[in-house]
Length: 80
Image 1 (cartoon, helix red, strand yellow):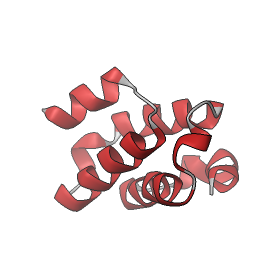
Image 2: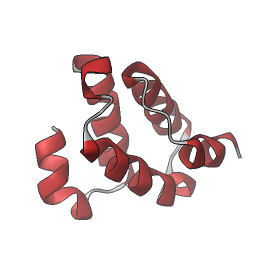
Image 3: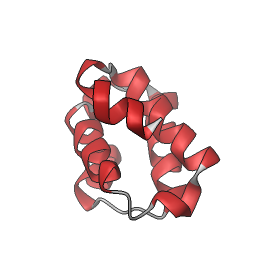
């Protein structure tokens, strides 16, 4: 899924981004925490945070928490 994001992420809507993060957390977890694509994913999620509904916000927060990847800007944006 990270390869799909790397290749086509510019086309992803908010729902697609939230689903991507959730899947990475569910199926990859910590083994992806040092993957460079997570930083790009976090940045894109942060730019779209106002477009998420409650479930999508939850999926983004949960997915990144499962990977143990911390992006302070993203989590601050979610908290607002």
